[in-house]
Image (cartoon, rainbow, N blue to C red; front, side):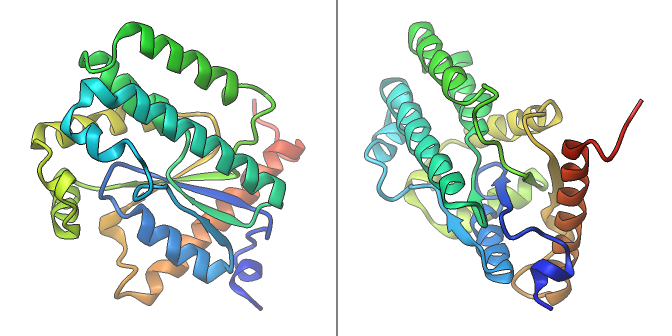
Length: 228
């Protein structure tokens, strides 16, 4: 029996990993994909033509960066569903508007006209009955100190040179965002509760939770569970 069958995770499942920068989304994506024999969908960071400029001048490049991410993630989401599922996705499309664009608008580093344009485009593309939402969003969370330590340890210059206040604000915004998120089912996992690099049992516990969450979600969709 393979792990998909053992934990009752359908082979057409689409699972998105969400969480703030440095929380371990890529590690989780790779671990789950390997265990389930799923394909991966990663955020295109290294090929992003705006990212370096953005970290040097938020106000000048925030709109360009968000439009680029929105287009790339929408194309990737479309490809995943056309393929028939069986994917683990690193970062969700929902974070773009709920966290990043809103943060820049609130802080004055994206002007109101650009923000309204971006938000209208996002709503037209994503917040409709026709957009294929994932089966499950896994939200990774942990203490702020743990996350900052991870950011520093991976050694990206543009992140290490970013003021600590930026990461503090992003951390707070993620906490508020996930508490109000309802676009698809959510499984919250604290990074202090597992160690995918050292503990074999950690992955098994996560897979068990994923299987239960997806099975429950699909029963709701089929009307097999009725709530008052």
